[in-house]
Image (cartoon, rainbow, N blue to C red):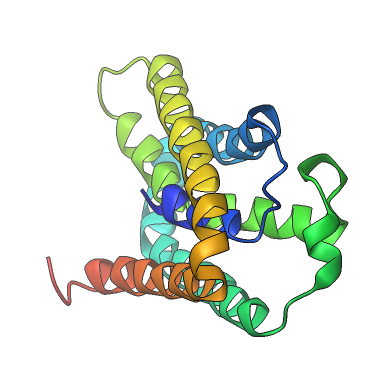
Length: 180
């Protein structure tokens, strides 16, 4: 759902002429990273479990907060060049922001992978299902965001930035046991 929220906000900045396959490629970035995270976590397993569980919430909080603040900043500083870009010709900055967003929303899957290392689970099937579900939700989020972008514009992007910050704060608060 955090990948869906991030994709929804990102979709508000995409031009309407993008086709389904261009949106799917961007959704696949979210899904691919979300699929790799539990695999990596699984193979890290017991060796780094304590370190990962001690710091994952701080990393997620910082990354999601920075990305959320960046989205809010971008909502108030429209870049006309962005409107003419398509998914396969985005700038290096946009590609980096996409990968960082996908990574930030998949940190919890890394920790899930560590936990799955101690269960009798086929990690490859689990990771594939996680990746497919995330690809589907992110692609849907991009599409809905693109539709909503015409109607609510910068407010959807601001809301998306706030959602990322709230997700980051909730991850931090949950791990610090401020609420359960």
